[in-house]
Image 1 (cartoon, rainbow, N blue to C red):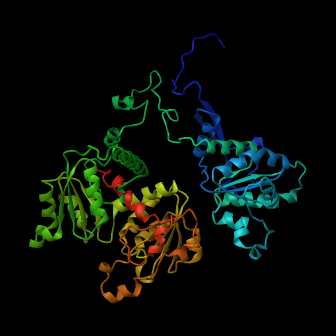
Image 2: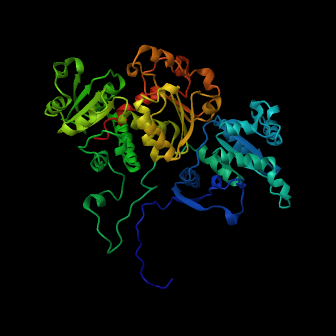
Image 3: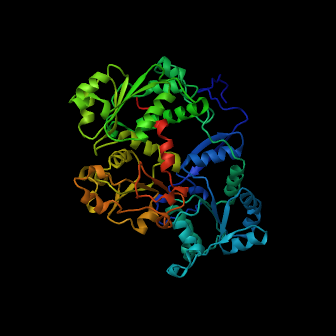
Length: 544
């Protein structure tokens, strides 16, 4: 404009043919009662810009960046005007061809059926008469039970509507969608754009086009050589491992981990898993030796450490109580000192709570806590958070219910501590004799995360849970057999109980199980406990 030379700064790596789309976001969930249909002047409190090869790719990336969840199965439509119905018909046909289950309100359902498409009618009854309605036909119950993955609600554009219409059925269902965190679209153009974007099946992995770090401006503080080397791309596995704050350090408690540590840890775990899937075995621990010491029975934890070490190119020396010099009276401290002479790291499980503190004090190599009595099980808790992220996409916003032995269940103690880094609510269900220790309970209360404490796994707790985390009643922790027999089958998860649960929740268990989860549940897609085991190799070796 002024005729002066211009030097582009910062340089960008976006291809010239790419499209940018800004997607608005508005915190309707924080505005109780507000109708999520607003004019242009109040379209958003913020925006996210994303790039793509087409407007569809850019738009769907932007939506996801605002926290929008793409639908898995069930889509509800409520379209007011005939003009909008006519405009949406090709998109609705597209949804049917993609295999989505279509639900609709009265007028919309009739229109869709007239055009030969299968649709299930859902009814919105006037306020106060819902008890007369069957659940299978109730729109409000489908929303409140999170049975709808996406709600496309296109209200009639009546500029002369009276204030009384503010409490219309359309408003009530839009508001319910917001309150129950169901993704909501209220604009016909946006709805068509979204459906077309979904139909194109874009690869939504983050690429170098989607994010970029910049070189410092002229005169700014210079970065280190390593930082500069990483500015134009994502870090390799070797570089990620070099950044780990836990290199050559003991892993004794989940209290060592910050939110940033967890993010780095799970990024490394993902990279290791992908590498092992592609190559079968990596060499990042080639020439290293891990010693595992298990003084309590273990199948999954011991096998997963063994498998993880070998998949990363290392070797394992296995020590158990029956063949160790502990049988001759050797102390934990002396055993640890000795094994540290042969190994580069030690994994320890021991029934005494103070065992890991002794090991960390006397070991000359990193020690990893694989369970110390009933106090903690850090690696299992890391695996559990990783599993929840993989299964549900996020940990934030979830309602998590712990069931069973909460007194001696060390996995629960560690997981509750890790959940301090996330926005969650927690329910505790256990017999009176197996209640959560006071210290853990007080921590949950102080963080405002504790929702319900109960001795009964009630229907409302099951229905509201995103995660039901079961624990085994541990016979070995009880002072006598009678105390164990009194509570061993206090809670049993079966198909009858899960009838009341959300369709997209998960059931977890650190295993082994006894009777607390019936085998019939194994065939329910919500049963995540064996998938939970499969994540083990990815997470167990990353801290050290």
